[in-house]
Length: 263
Image 1 (cartoon, helix red, strand yellow):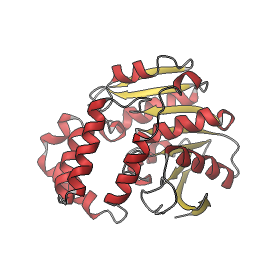
Image 2 (cartoon, helix red, strand yellow):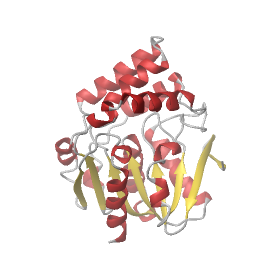
Image 3 (cartoon, rainbow, N blue to C red):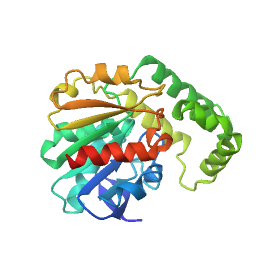
């Protein structure tokens, strides 16, 4: 996996596919592997650039960890690859990073896709994240906290097949680059310390807000309200999908992204 240095952090990333550049920015506790369900589809149309954010995947660093720093890492990665501009897609926390990049360096962004991402964090979502982190910091087993997390990530139909749930838990527990509890705390603190509420009004990049119809973390109505002041953003609701909408409905997700970027 390639690596480059950005502001005292060695940032790991993956490149996949061929076509116009599309950067994919993962969410909390996730890395480039989280794009697995959609990367084979998107890579047929785009060159995918998939960094591991600070404190996730193979980007292990003691350097400062903040939303702003991670947005700067993404801009530095474009510089490193000698790419003047790229489309950018961010999921959840990755959407905050992507939006920050778009506001701070609008000339570097072609179009922007914010998937299951909100400029403000509802109290329920904060409570969920805090409780999950307390489970981990309190010594709960990896299986217990992952099962608790999955309830907020996936659509109800996912849980109707116990064997599939058990297999997903086993796969997550076996992943060699899983985020440590210490780095999860650092990412959660970065989210808590970041106020993005004023960014939508400054967002001039053409933007697709992709919301999961059944998202319990950021509902479509909450996303719509948070981006009411964004002059160039439009909302699309993806059916059959919750917060991890690219896992719940990968075909529909990829189709929406490709159609928007091709316009």
